[in-house]
Length: 464
Ligand code: PFF
Image (cartoon, rainbow, N blue to C red):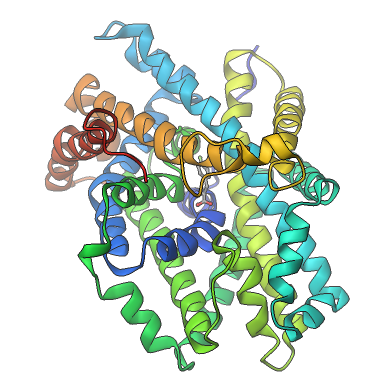
């Protein structure tokens, strides 16, 4: 007998859990450094367009499919595709999603582990000492990344916390964690943004972010913006689909999708404003761009009264933001084992979580600790090592391809009557909105994603 499936306690429960999945290291760590690498303005615009035209409709599609299918990604595609074009082959999209969840969590948890180390450093006072000496933060970060034991420890602790939350299930674990942590996270971010607005570098930061120079744009940056939109919104692998399967029928799909996407984008932009204001104010050089969050930001906390407390508080919140995301990654993989393999939640969580931990050790060792793992290169410049390779593979290939297939399924295979049926419940009178979504999901999203993938593969547009 399959156990009864969980359900969110209400509209807010779903929104907070899904926003918890979306808001994470992707916003606070990745978005600022990718934006920095891609030279700001134009990249930010392309990113916002990708969220509005591709991300938002695909988020709606995932919620529609999830709530209608009522299962994990594999089961949902199997059920909904039965007797239609493509039939069982659609299950492959679900499998790819589960695999992407496994892969992403295996390296995401390593970075999440860094936040734990920084909390300890801040509380113990060492972070303040590092911040006081020029270049000491960079040097520390470099040495820390290459310390295999420390990397595996952080990864293990974070996987442990993630598994603990997923073990408690949808309402008592996932929703409860998000309900407590998300409001706290917003408060702190707003506080930091207000501080950033008073710094001298604020104007320069705003210009860097919102005054586009299209000359800096390459095809690779467009692909990266799209990949980042998928990653940041947790799309293309069935995480939002899985959370949608726990959604009550009376809640509005368009409204939830809009709120989640808007929140996520706002957090990413706020993180950029905060970090670039600080970078420009203090004339900091960004040496380890992947490490902005860990090398640049700490310096500033100690310019302020009570710096140690601020720093500790901040890294605790980054850890929380990461946790609500790792929970959703593991939930995708666990829900697959629960629904399809008929495992208990406990068995699914422990086995899958354990497997992800073991695989992730390779990533933990690929930041300098192990030679071959750290230098392996498939995707070209700036993508050295297994960690960066998997990140590039997942964010720029698995998620966009998954998103494309989800869009095609929701737009062309699922009948309009069925998707309308889902949208209508909880959002009566949304006919015009539904028509707009149908247009985006049938034409705009697949064409945009398809064109980018096509040009990268077939027009020989190289990554560099
Ligand atoms: N959206 C998360 C972030 O921005 O950090 C990462 C993520 C979570 C990606 C869940 C994909 C996913 F399914």
